[in-house]
Length: 343
Image (tube, rainbow, N blue to C red):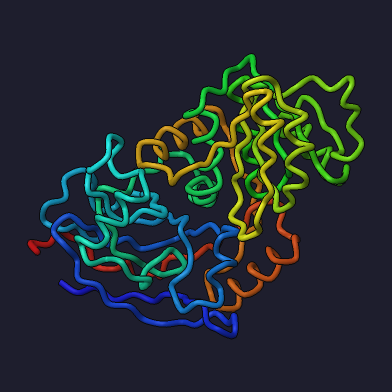
């Protein structure tokens, strides 16, 4: 069966273009009516392309392929960057190489679906159910921003006794503060100004410093340092803030080249650790943790329309979002027909 739905693309002029996409529902796929989408800084990089934007989606399942047994019609689900997995790696497709291979196998290596849409067709292996009581508008930003910091803190050994530094109080950084604080870490926030100091302390930071005013003689070193802002600063100066065998995590999508000073890294055993796309299991664990700990992103809502997307993207570019933009679409009065298809 073919399913058609409205999507929103970028364009060479940076205008948001409304279009209609038609997809054939596969045996292991679901049709999701999208209600919410987070907006990520990464979307800015693709605004001048013609692809459908967005990778932080939440919606309601309306149709099932005949092989789908893990979810049912009416379930509220989240879905992110990965569309299909091939099971070639130990963690079921969280590696980018495995995703690319599976995309070629399934013929889905296109840019015709995303989360800035009224609907989408997604493989059932890459969706997860949102817990009852956790708002969709809060769940959407967790699927990329929240998952990125969650992967750092859970996969690379951050412990409650560790001093965890966070550079930047923005879309990523404010969630890093909230999550790390609830994990029991000692949270140290570094910023270029004190404009967001009150927010950082309210979100759970134990210490706050202006970066160029740090007294290095009295500063206690960090075991982990998450670079969450667009400003990365001088990497050599950040290394001097690290504890022996500490780890620095660059987390923002930037095309700027960064000089890596090997001598101070090697003399103290400092690591620079990359992050990867979150698996479905990672996303489930994150949502369950945030639901249990009552962690919610700080959001600004916009309508999921071309004008709403344009306004949100412009405010994001101007640094006017506090702290995560979410597109919201009210469902139409007449629901999309539902059912299970023998495709």
